[in-house]
Length: 419
Image 1 (cartoon, rainbow, N blue to C red):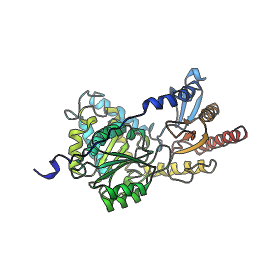
Image 2 (image 1 turned 180 degrees about the vertical axis):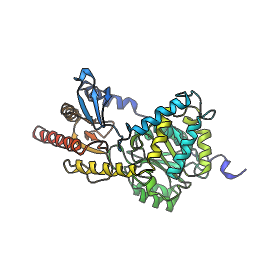
Image 3 (image 1 turned 180 degrees about the horizontal axis):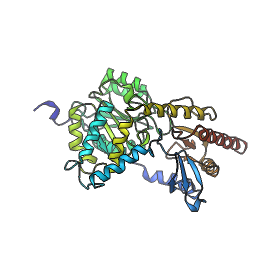
Image 4 (image 1 turned 45 degrees about the horizontal axis):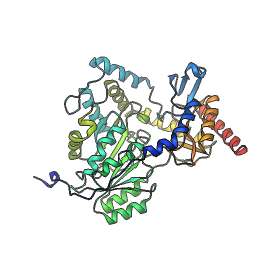
């Protein structure tokens, strides 16, 4: 039997705890206030492009949505909607309650093959990116991806909640460390002191900013660092095939030491999640032992059909047109509103108001002016950094983006006058 099938080397495993009790105590009052101001948990009717119709209890008005992460405006694209409905009609089903290790729709196999070709990787799809991460991180911690030696798994402090949530599970297998955001010096120090290290981070961070992919690849080449990158917010926005922020910066092959998680929603415009893998052995392990694969069902047929239509669109000139349109909308916003992310090619902008009450009030004022934005506060961002998060998309008109920018500028001016 080859070494790759031997049991990984055992290591001392520290215990790890979550702080859900503290989070609820700290955030519950502010979340309740946001709900009372009707800026969270809204139920709406979709309208044309990025507009939505509020419920009658909210005066039934039409507002422009800057919350959804459909960065290329594909989530209501006619060909993607048609792909979803055609798949259901063709197969005369929507969903099979069956683990993927037993039965799969043929169309799902076709989708994974098409995505593998599109993104130059071995693709496995999941119902969500959360499910993909849930299945992947315990296998990463097991050592079976790192020469049968359990790695020290290092999380970026700002890694998405769907990554950080799994720290206790990973800590049951191996040592877990958390470092400051994008702290390459701390990461390199851990690499120097340990034989195997895996780094878990976002490609594009949900509150703005990105991972320094080129610098991480230097550490990978120098120390054998394993990279696990959640690029849910970067997929489709970068690369000739829409392969994403992270994948577009990596060579032709992912190789043995990089895995990328991504969304089939967001920029891609369909529904679900995926993993980009580099080797046949990785694919075997994930299809046999990933918890969300072996003990849960696949994407439903509507999601599969929508994703098939989207991957076909990604092979046309329309992808570049939408990428360029997104860049124009981002630039239009940056001309009006200063933010930490200004002049970045990434689509997420955050505008700080400081305290939670001001953030909630600003979001409510913007809603009254016809713009729906996300009020952000702890635990989404650090305490004292509450504000607004907005997502300009290719589906917005320039006039809508400029209108939002002017409304935010006015809200900031009012905040300065009445601190």
